[in-house]
Structures are given as C-alpha cells and as structure tokens.
Length: 340
Image (cartoon, rainbow, N blue to C red):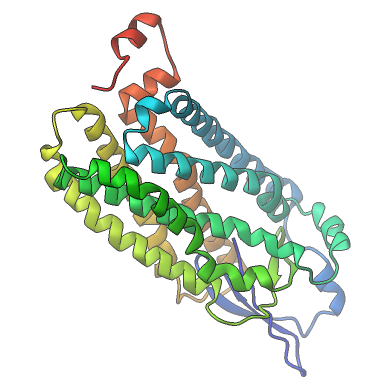
C-alpha cells in the first residue's frame, strides 16, 4: 500500500511523495503544468504493457490463492488432528490474511495501478477527498497483522525446540490472546490514515491514493519500518535457535514438528529479505519517477512472495499436509492417517 503526502506552496505546485513500504521520497515540480493534469493519468506509459504487468501478477496471485485454499481446506477438515499444533493455528490465521490481501490486490488495488483506462472513471466517481478511499489502507493493515502473526509463528517454533515437553499446553492457551494482540496493535500506526480523508492521485500507468492526514501522530511509513524491524530481529533470533536446537524435538510427532520448523525457517528467509529492503530504502531518495516506479514495483513484488509462497513451502516440506491436500490413493492416505 502506498501513502502520499501533498505539499503545495502558494507560489508553486510541488508534490512531495512518500512511499510505503519503501518510504522513498522525492519532489516533482508541477509548476509547468496546468491543474488539469491532476485529473488525468500520468502520460508516457503504454496501456498494453501496463495491462500485461497486471496480467502477470494476476497469474501468480491466483496460483497462490489456489494453494492457500488447498491448505485451508485440509486444516479445516481435519482440525481435530492439526489443532494440536499451535504453529498451524497461527498459520491458519496467516493464510486467511493472505487470501484477503490477494483479493484486494487483484480486484481493487493493482487493477487501478496498472490499467490506465480505469483512471478517468475512478477519478470521476471520486473527484473530491473522501473517507471511503481511506479504506484502501486496510491492505496495509493486513500486512502489519501478517508480520506480527509470523513473529509469533517463529517464536512458537523456537519454544518447541528449546522446551519441547513443556510449552505445548501453555501455547494453546495463549494463542487466542496472541491473535487478538496481532489484530489490535497495528491500529496504533494506521488509525490516523483511517480517520483522515483520502483522494486519488494519478501516478505512472494508473493512480494511487493520497491521505490528507487530518490527525498527525505516527505515519504509516514510520510504523511500517517499526513493524519490519521488530519482525526481522525476532525472526533472525528465533530462526537461529531453531537451526541449533532442532535436534531436541521430542520423539512424539517428531517428523511433523521438524517439518513445521523447517517450513518456518524457509519462510523466515523470505520475510527477512523483503522487510530488509523496506528498511534499507527508508532513507533513499529516487532521482526520477522511473526509479521510483522501479523500487515501488520491486518492493510490492517482494511482499507478493511472502503472500504466495508460504502454502507452497508448507506443502513441499510437510508430507502429511501434502498427502491430505492432494490424495493419490486410499492406500497412502490410510498409511499416513495420523501424524508421525
């Protein structure tokens, strides 16, 4: 999601753009243009190329949606078996969040970013700042919740390898409170955006939305960096603990526990990579619109990996989930009727 802050002095038209999650800033001088340009899409972009970009993103989003639904179906159908693992309870919530992010991107956010013919229609529907456009920050809110949920997922894996015999019951009791905390705490950073009016601003092949930030406290980009930093530190420490102590996994359900730990470590690599980019470019200043668009697309793609890849990793590393999601014959299913 992107947040834009507009500053227009009385003697010139200049817009300062701050982009989240990369939080890069640069200024564009619109003094040579008329006011009409703010009601049109940015010129110089080929409609067919922008639609092709959107089509590619739709393909991998739909593939990710298919794998998410496949895993969720088997978790829901055999919840009495898988609910004994707190990691899978948290993953269940994380997967639902990923589905919401995919649907918002495919049906609302990316379609307006990459399909220029929709710009005149959308700008005509919402020519003035409105509270309704602020709802687009829900996608950023979901991303914050997703990061916090994964923090607790990797903490669960670290606890299981450090104290394999004592933390299972405690974690099952704590999971509802963890989920509640993950959903409520991001409001600290996004409530100002929700309560402020927003408006559409043409940019590159399509347009994005700008918040007028009526209530100034902590900005969404700053809060995004805080969440990213917390996630990276937690993930690095817990992943290191998992790799060192994985041999201490208890014999009961040993195979399943180890496969979940391996899945968490693999997913942590993607999290650290994507969120490190966000922090690294926090102070970066793009020299041109083209560079800004490049880093914007690169950052969005890195988080797309975090949304699409987790179910693929789970299915590849967990035999039980893979067989239940894609059963080949009854013999295999009966042989693996209970976690190892």
